[in-house]
Image (cartoon, rainbow, N blue to C red; front, side, top):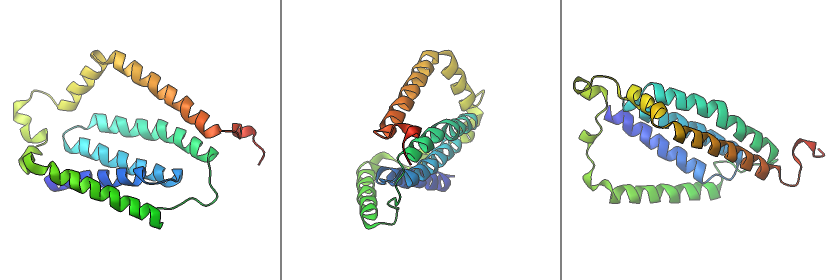
Length: 173
């Protein structure tokens, strides 16, 4: 199980590096989908089943639609790909920085701390993700409303930034 979680975390880091160093919105969208999939896999590996599914569906259903709309308005005829020299150099520098930070912080981490919820199931009365969902809706209602307002504001900011001087769909083609 530790090897699977290691693979998922490694894919999560490489996906974040691909998002961080890519100037083209098309390949950055692909990196975001990869990061979302690996992140939900990490949550599933630590015992959650319901919350990662909901997060993945919300991400693919909502945020990717907004991103596709803003990428269509800011379309480039020849986007820079992941294989260009500048992007590869940026990826190498970011991976080197992550490796150095991981090597520096590695001192107190051991594989025995990667125990999942199912491995300690005899000590709990219910699953961890069900209790977390109940706490999210009971005590975190105000935080959910604030998060929804922030996402709505982000939607308007992204659409206004991508519109620019072209005036959206009314521009001359």
